[in-house]
Image (cartoon, rainbow, N blue to C red):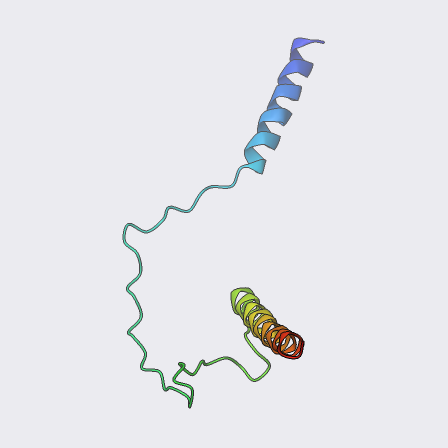
Length: 93
């Protein structure tokens, strides 16, 4: 390669490497202030009433929480049913 072609190749490589880098935005020194605490109403069960939209949660974390709660309640119901069946089986010899 000639010197001119090496310079061109190196300058193109440097430009491509520089174009691929994105400048980082510095983080703020202090965290944003915490939102004021909310006073939540409680339902008939004593649990806090959530502000979820009618179809359920809107965020991915909220949807995961809702799915976990549904799974937990289904599991608990299944365990109660199994316990009742076991009581019926072992009660009548």
